[in-house]
Image (cartoon, rainbow, N blue to C red; front, top):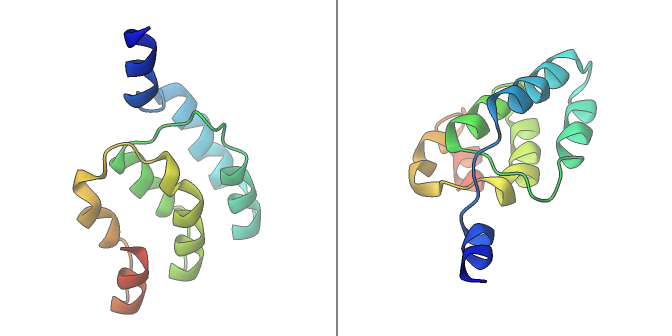
Length: 100
């Protein structure tokens, strides 16, 4: 039972192959609204590393779209100890503040 509970707390990052499919799908999407729809369809047990999360945000051209994407993926980010790296993907200080 303890192993089961521990497995719920410690999630592994999204496997490389699955993550590659996700980024390919995002790249093929024509509009940011389509990209956001894709992110919203992630399974609830998804877990993303900080570097995966940053790369996903980099798929968006505008900070406003990045903020919307961050709102979607934030619950899935497993290692938040490097949060400062994610915040630096935003251009303007007001957006950085919103991201943090």
